[in-house]
Image (cartoon, helix red, strand yellow):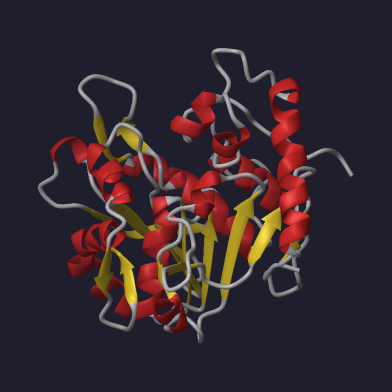
Length: 302
């Protein structure tokens, strides 16, 4: 088995689509692999590095990538009246046989102050389906829900919700109010309290955590406070994946990864991310590990 590629590059962390070769191996047979690549694809914007900045969806690029793997976009949803395309974003994609739909949310863009403000607003707010949730994440979803809810309700086939980072949080919130066939999240922060997590008991949830990824540990879980949805599919330092390993095993693996990262990946170089806690949040590192992981015959994680 060949080693799974790992990127320490800042460009891959901050501009996930810049160097991306989407679906390089063709159409994935695994639902998790399909979702992790769609989560990265959701970062594609018109001019993320140019001036003037435009973070609106690059709709033609997204549509072209999806067409190559047998999907088409049924709708794009973005915060209305937001300058330079800032705010929340998601797209709805349908497989060409109309038997599978995927709703993919974009994660945090470092150049979007509205995203950063939403991430930082970690006060609890009441959630209609039960419990309390992150106020900033809830506000982001509200920017989309007026057009997104009818689009979700119109889907008459198996549907997957997915996202990376902030996108994972939004997918989790939507799953509480509009139960999907499955929820796939990558690098998700904590979204709500135990009562909120209980609203997702009937949802099949696959939550991927890449080794030292710091985003998966904020806001910190405290008694009576934030709780994660289910056990993680944990990506080890060696890029293998295991469901729900013991916390002691995770701690040992994270320590090993933290200690070796500066030397193995030359963290002192200007083009590289300085610490493993951030490098492990990079979308392509989720993509590579999940693409290499085995799956059952029905496409769900083994």
